Length: 310
Image 1 (cartoon, one colour):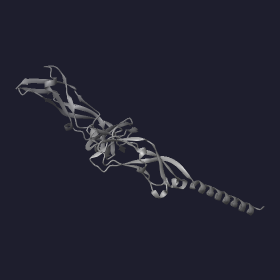
Image 2 (tube, helix red, strand yellow; image 1 turned 90 degrees about the vertical axis):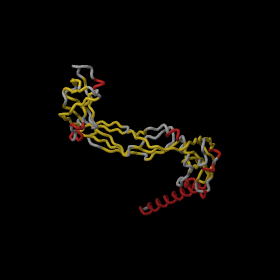
Image 3 (cartoon, rainbow, N blue to C red; image 1 turned 90 degrees about the horizontal axis):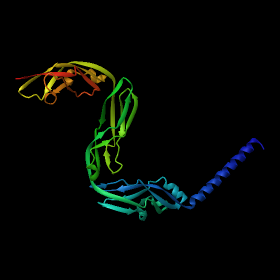
Image 4 (cartoon, one colour; image 1 turned 30 degrees about the vertical axis):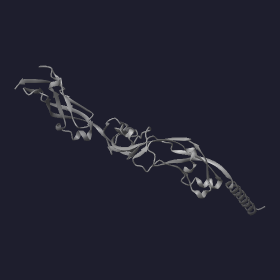
């Protein structure tokens, strides 16, 4: 037997095998089977004044009966278990095993719903819908390389609208983001971060994610001279002079922030009514600034007050 005849016999064997597999497959696909799989649970609610209070299962396990080819084709169609709650305003317990007609699938497939496997019952509790705008609280753990510091965290947007059952919305004061973690950061970066949704109540969030900007700068130090010392809450009959009347501030923070820092950005304040204990007693001052800095110290840090009647 030459090489040509071997190849011819091999091709014939392959053809016969493929034909046999095809015929076996066609016979199998023409038989009837029972097959169960999870289909999405779709809730329809056209009443905008009421909404679901608690989460419900995402899927329903449905057992279908039909020929093999029809069941195979079913995998490529949008099959759902559809429940209309538009007329529900309170609480209902539905035995979904008694409602196979709620399963939506193409009728031309010649498939029937044999049974609803699970869950057997679903509790639907409705509440009046309400919405409010709440603050977004970022959750993060950002560590910088030595010599760098995180100077600011900015969100866009910094508020979101939460819509859901009134009993839940009344208790919401802020919404948290998913955690952001970064190690050894040395450059500013931005992350799109989803919100942490309530696991107890069913609510909608607009938008569902926010953008967080982490401003990382090189750590720097600077001295601010000639910052005046103020004395507040002084009785009108008295004249009070702080000694010394000007200080030098030592500050640490991001290099871009410190580059623009001036004496006018700081207040060194002594509260006379609260802190003064009598002549000769040194008292501390409070340092206020709108700048986001890591550390500030005044030189000197203790002051005497010269007090006299007007």
